[in-house]
Length: 297
Length: 317
Image (tube, rainbow over all chains, first blue to last red):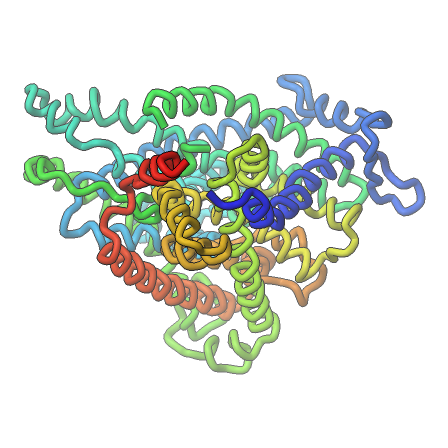
């Protein structure tokens, strides 16, 4: 093996980088959340010493987000509902696609794979820009619907419609759901399917009793991978809605962060979000650890 | 974190399972293939057609981005076009500058850290690898906010603007490089480097002559991923920007999509999309060539020859 000193030297730069820009950065976030505001400059002042931490900001943001009674509870609730629907949409759209490419496709596999990687190379913003053009009052969606006689007058889709926000979230993030699911479907031992069929199960039975349970971990991984950014997403909302009636938690944090005096609140809300996501992810982390153990990795 | 490794396409890790013969029978099911195929085609149209339409609108003859007014190339060559409007052109240049620096910094940093994490036997690796992959499990907005506070309140030697944007993007990309590299590293037995060291190579030599060539596909894949993620990145780039001179293309799109921007906006987005596709496509071709060449020279990289080393050494003692 390499001399330990040599290996340590190899890892030194990267370790310093993550200590500085991950650990210290997250500490700075907490220090701002428990810090104060400079009375003259009106800018946030971090409190680095844990002994002097003041929890007023965390408390006030926590009260605002408190279930049922808080003033921002409606935003939090809305975020969870939008994301839950978007996740269901991602599974319903993403699973058949991933399944097809990983298991069924043969001659078309290369081209389909290339086409579904394409959204990763076309930036997220461009894909939203495309929909803003289509959904504009004088856009193609409205003219198509009016042409078909489904609507008398053009509808302004981009003025705070929850349906549009949820659809935009699905459209934006579904490729990120498909990729890990595809990877897990392409990986599992497909002889199980053959065994299932040899034992007399039909296509549907094989799918329900073999394929689906075996791809559960991939579905979870995909859901986690898209749910995390959705909780911090403010740009999708801003582009396809832009009104506070569809604001999500990400919108809340971003709005706070725009004004210096509210930056402590942004930090406090971000800390709460991380705590919430940690609790939400705990079952997933447990189950993936168990699955990893079971496979013997 | 192993499931994150599993979340990557097997091609990236260079260990795709061989196709099974049974699939031919499953594929022979006509209706399943037919209905599913239609669904997949519909998905692909839904996912790509809007982008193509946005591309089309960059050739619109009028000022609208939603009503077709005839074909013209004025937004590509005219006085208000992408290349003549400094807002768009500077953003394009800035995006490429950031992507270039991000690749050059994050790939060596991430690969060396991944080798350390993968080869080091000791207590330091668990917390270090957890810390390194943390940016993957924290929403980007939280990381952006944290980095913004870090840079403005503590580390004043990094200023917001280009340096801050590079730091932020590299921090965000690093875990991806690490995941890709470690996936590959896991399939390279340490016996090869041990053999090189036993045969008198210096540690640097063993790393450079044995490990780096074996890691080449992963290094290339990381570079492609780093480039694509940097070009696409919005939240961190936005939070770490200082003035209009550090606007990247996604920021320009974010700031002007809901306004009355001309189709030159679509054109600028398209310039980025096309160059990204071309660069990543070329990168992928090189990746495939490297992968193929290596698999000829070295067909059974996953077989562990390690036991011979210790046995020989024990025999000598």
